[in-house]
Figure 1 (cartoon, rainbow, N blue to C red):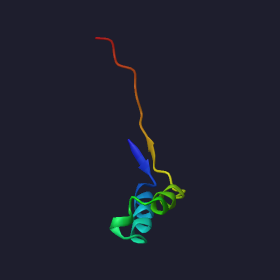
Figure 2: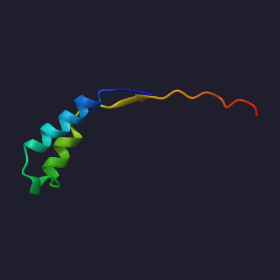
Figure 3: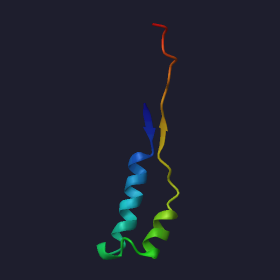
Length: 53
């Protein structure tokens, strides 16, 4: 398995939360700011067919 943008996405979320008091993390403004983060964490997972038993 391979992953990219994980650290960047996590840091972007932390940066948004840092702009708000913890009591406001569930506010509409915080949810909107989080939704505007344009970094997507991506995964690559490889699958192989099972061998015949």
